[in-house]
Image 1 (cartoon, one colour):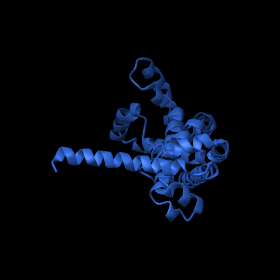
Image 2 (cartoon, one colour; image 1 turned 135 degrees about the horizontal axis):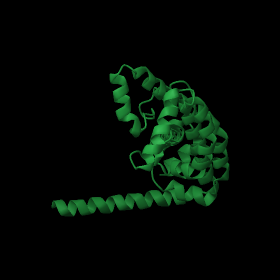
Image 3 (cartoon, one colour; image 1 turned 30 degrees about the vertical axis):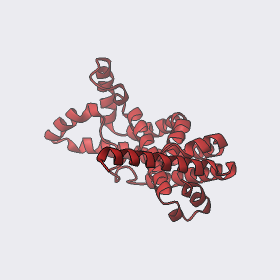
Image 4 (tube, rainbow, N blue to C red; image 1 turned 90 degrees about the vertical axis):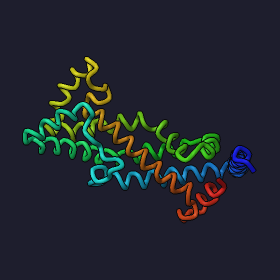
Length: 228
């Protein structure tokens, strides 16, 4: 068998496997598909909130730790060279503490998103890839969560003088295209990064469920995701 023929057979085999997996998923009852996805969402949300909504949930986790806005990098290096590194560190800490304070507020909205998921949504998401549940979650909750997070983040970061100074300078720089619009306000920047971190951690839990549904100890998760 030459290489081209082997590759063709491999692709065909993978296609058959994917079709079989989708058929198994679609053979699930509506009730099971819906229950399984709701259980996955609830589990992912619970884990994410518990991991992030505590001291060092963001600051101590390199996967979600919020760095300085890109527009502050050069200024931060200059400040450190002038012996003002402490102020830079205070801002980074305040940004991450703000995210940690905001995340617990997501519980109710995440719970509502789970309750509102339709059966059709559930079946489509089941065969949509490793993070399809999380993507659906983000689509339904990102905007309202952003509105909920922003005032909490603002209260936390306004305690740091450097944040206000940065906002004043970055707003002008943004007008000249020197700073990205998304980076021109510390509070909005942190809110966006906090949401990114939340959905990332929900996605990580979703991947774990898909890879090892038996290990979750949940009968419905085993039944639904085991079918994939």
